[in-house]
Length: 372
Image 1 (cartoon, rainbow, N blue to C red):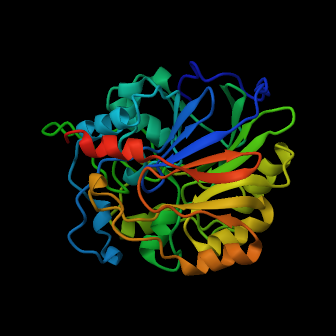
Image 2: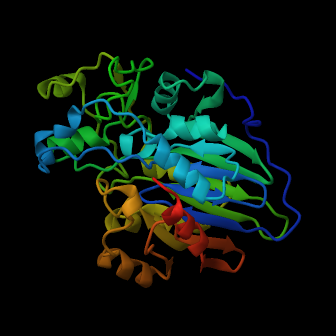
């Protein structure tokens, strides 16, 4: 099922290249949330600001995240971030997958900015439930390419979610599931249920291969908001009987198995774009996953994401410093330029010379000065 393609551009059409030497700015806003800015286009990736209450027990083997009370997005907090960023126009919101820590705030960003949403079917259904018209959300498929304007294009490829398939929860987490129909808002709160097998299943997990076209210096970067070293070369899906063992109903969910391995999807995407490397990979903070992908992607630089905690209030900032030493040493060994974040709203510029951190104190100051 596809929703409208209004304002998205055409498939399989190479955009006109930019005329000046290209650059791309990346601003990290926690977890997998990024504002990406070229000279002419602004894209929000995921954009999750609302923090949901942490499950009572941290022992996820008990599957507490299956059922969570309905919750409304933190619209005030999202407005605060938009104002701090300078009320910049956002053209597109791209959703990598549909869990609450990625797409819970998609509808609010779309409503406040008018941006067109592109992502899993579940993300579109979540947004539609919250009042976004179907024409403002495009359900994406593997192998599609979109001209985003200003010389920027993106190729969609199937990816995979984390989860150890040797454990029940891990096996469930990594199995792609989509919503079938638009979820129903809670009659008392007006919210949706953020549980991973309620209104916010994983959806199909997607990654994005971007190209900023230029005659001499095109820039390519890859963004993937999850990853799994256990399923990179072979999918491991569950069946309905396994779900029923844990009391998971498929009344509004459907399993959407991958047709190929993630490795094959990546090879196909790189081949289609005629690439032997990318300038930057913004990827999942897992050294074993990164070790598998590097030989195919051959990134010049890497920035980790999906780290820094899910439960701390957003406006309290990053609580702990980066600590994945194995990944740091791996990237040094592979000759990949490594940049890890130190605080929310860290900003980077990518151009033909590589990636460089750039000051963003003005935005941080605005975040702190705006009343919550």
